[in-house]
Length: 454
Ligand SMILES: Nc1ncnc2c1ncn2[C@@H]1O[C@H](COP(=O)(O)OP(=O)(O)OP(=O)(O)O)[C@@H](O)[C@H]1O
Ligand SMILES: [Mg+2]
Image 1 (cartoon, protein in one colour):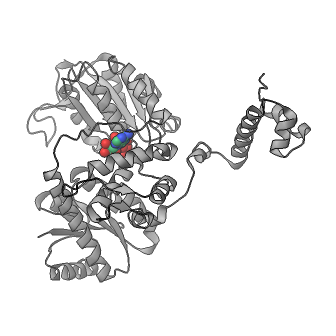
Image 2: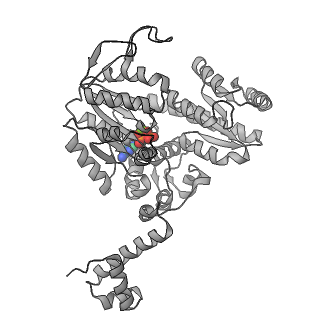
Image 3: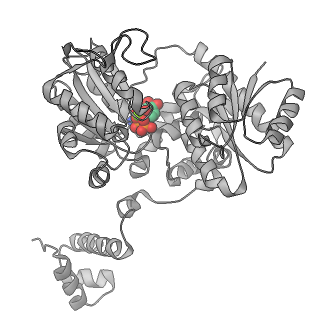
């Protein structure tokens, strides 16, 4: 028996959904906005949320983020008006199960709800049955960029150097941070994580530094902060670009002096903590816009590690798919599923905005919702978001942010270099190969300052 929470500000929609779902024997809770919804999640055993993206006070996306942060296992179905499809697609990237467009088709609702509830149930069963031998921390992939990262981890882990990990959502930043901790002399001591984006600004200081009893209204007892909890271990400051400037100033002070006071306290506390920070924002832009302190950036960024997006290392997809197929294999099957050639091709052409996390979710769903041994492209397509398919080849990735002129010139120069090399730097042969006059080739070589070897 499953419990469903509906968060929508339109009373009409709430009551229709309630009727339909109660007919299907679900227990239904109703909330008219995000705050009330989160309260109910806190007090009731909710399995599934149906969430409107367009909500007063706290927007639907924000509510979704909070749900996914605090109640990982609760599935969310997002509903949106026609004008909000982009928001809805975005919601799927954040982890929503699916989205439904208004006007709502009752039949569609029932099907999607049934699927979500089933997924949820199977996930729980699978978790229970799964032996816990599978390590979460393995870093799969052999793309040169990943090899480089593994090398930096080996070299930097034994030191106490501060590390800044950059990269898009779901690329594996936390995985890198944990690997560094595990390989360090601090591995026997705690790895403490703080998600700076998830903590309201008014509470972050007490979260980081702790507080004394009575220092503010809700401080009913003395509490240790994350810096103290991480003593002798590693403190992982995640989403640092989301810290307010005043918190940044305080963190900077702690890094410089290695001591701090609890909120409302006098005693100066010193700790031995190794800092690893991460962000998915373009931190240099944040600095330019004066939203991030440059001095703090330099302090944190002793060793930078850039984790590339999945679309820039599609060669690793083969290996990742095999790995996740094994990981999510249902206990009832003897062998993991395999994907067909054309399905693999489809995976490689997809742009993966949610990176490895998204790939992992897709493979998990395929395992739970599908019983074919060999997954075809047609089947797989059902588990990819339809509206975000965007076919960019991985070699185009380096051009992604350039203007057309710059991209064209960059390409031209690289292409000429390639052809020169394969023609042993013979200008006449190269010009012929390229289908241009030698004089034309020569002027381009000068323009781009290409070195003629040999
Ligand atoms: N190279 C990899 N091999 C295997 N699993 C990976 C790899 N990289 C990431 N993962 C898995 O993908 C998921 C997302 O990784 P992680 O949480 O480290 O990403 P993140 O960069 O911290 O994301 P976010 O910015 O959203 O916090 C995790 O479940 C992680 O175990
Ligand atoms: Mg993370």
